[in-house]
Length: 343
Image 1 (tube, rainbow, N blue to C red):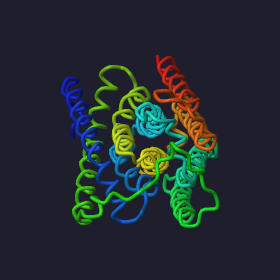
Image 2 (tube, rainbow, N blue to C red; image 1 turned 120 degrees about the vertical axis):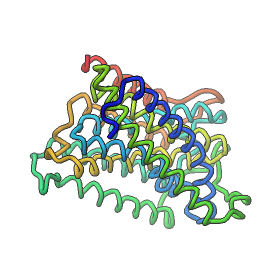
Image 3 (cartoon, one colour; image 1 turned 180 degrees about the horizontal axis):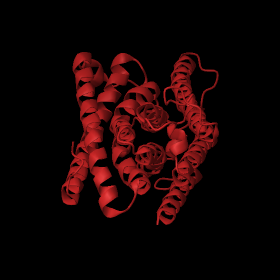
């Protein structure tokens, strides 16, 4: 189905899916922000779980579909490249927030916990790649560990939110998390139905996007690693960009950062799902070196982000701190490395 598309049709489909993903991602921000207030989840948890999962659906479907079609490089480059580009998007959100560094204003125990969880999950992916190629029913042992670690990390983050042992100091730039009175009047059922509808639109777009990307990679000779890491990863990550910028403009700074970090943590499960879908053995051992570089860079970018939230550097309006510059430099290195090694 949709495997023999002409290149022009594939590009049109690719652009159409990009538009749907961008629009749906924009609408999700307000829905999740209102749900955070309406349900009492809070911005950090709602951003990490609801917004992070929903905006990741298109990428998840794409990676699983690629793995089922015996395209492990496309599956993994999309998953791992998406984590890197979503972290890069925080630098754009940082520029949009004019008062002070976003990492300073949005520092919270929830975001730091999610960042630590992401470091653990990315490290497990690397462990899987360098561990022996053992499988049970074609599934590597790291795959269930990824799921267990993710769920346990969410539980810890939720417990820490209720009984924190550490709090960031409030400053003039800190944006307090206060419920929106208008959100409290909206129907919870309507909010959930809107959330589910937008999430389904993202999932269908991810499936169609994988078909278009496969044709583009084959017809242009760019290769699955370049198309996956630099094209589909960017497109399927657009919801994270638009939701983060929209959240910053709404003053929901914790939600903006939580959506990115929580989405990245959920994105590591793309690898686990792709390993189950891939019938050629352990998908961890199908990761090419240029794609594995994105795991290392994502670890570094996340660590820089966490250091930024702890250090809480202050810069004047319109300026960004060391963490945003460092993250952007890491992504540039990865993109150039992938282009040159694929050429």
